[in-house]
Length: 428
Image 1 (cartoon, rainbow, N blue to C red):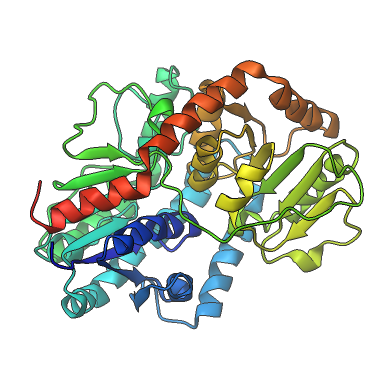
Image 2 (cartoon, one colour; image 1 turned 120 degrees about the horizontal axis):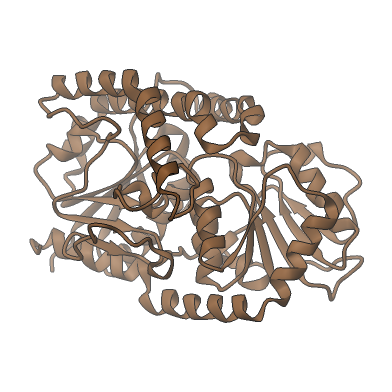
């Protein structure tokens, strides 16, 4: 096969970005070229992994530091909404997210045609929740990557995306979908008007994207998938079983106390780290335990003092290298954290706050791979008891070991690279 150029266009968030990095690494290992289409604020992320990156404005142009501050302020401004039930976040956090997402599609349409003409990719891989018409219209195969929870691809028999509902709560599913459609309608109407200007047909209410006719790659692991009314056709939908990227190695530091105690990793992602009050509560609880903890505090390291001797904080950890070394994880339910814990067979407590963290928290508990815990309604004793329960649960450990063995045997990045390059060569 002659060298192919594969373009990746992930959402401007670390979860999708780093998943695409893992696939791109596998593409280049096979002798082909991987390039990134990128929100200007993420260009340095891809260049840091050695990839060529081309900026595509997804909002009014501004310096990268201002863009980073915009999203930091956006998330921090919604902290009061993080204690609400998912259905009660629809008319605030979720609504404002969709307004920004639709705006990003409009902005992308200005730059994308020219960038694609310059790169001339053989396949375009897009990881987002919204259609960019220029990608669909470029005339080359395009792949949709779903790095969020599996229910981003809707089905009447499974919980609606973002709902955090049990698989069996069918009445709840109806109520959530009805409320979502009610809240989203003005934004959806606006998006359909935009699609009309690009020559695309309108979408049904609630839909902002479509499955690719070529290939759709779900990061989700098959052992925790939902039972669908209409099973996904494997000719067009493939599971990547976590698709974990390669990252820098990590050495666990020495702790002044509890140096032989079970090791806990705590992370709420780059944006969730802004909830410093919650992080300090968790640190205070662990300080009174037999555990050690690595705590990811993001850009807020200066907000912490008097760190307990059994706790180590950093602004960033190479997570795929850290999780194999720990005994359990506390996280927000982001899809990278969710799938990486399963990939490495580690039990987790998920304290969700927004988006598909709610779905993943419910799923980790329903499938017996960890626990869901309210983000704020817990005592120190309850949190420590949950951790102890995870560590002592032999059935959970066996289930995690089986899921981990399955996921690791599939080699998601290699599988994705093979499917993408088959398309580039003209295969179905």
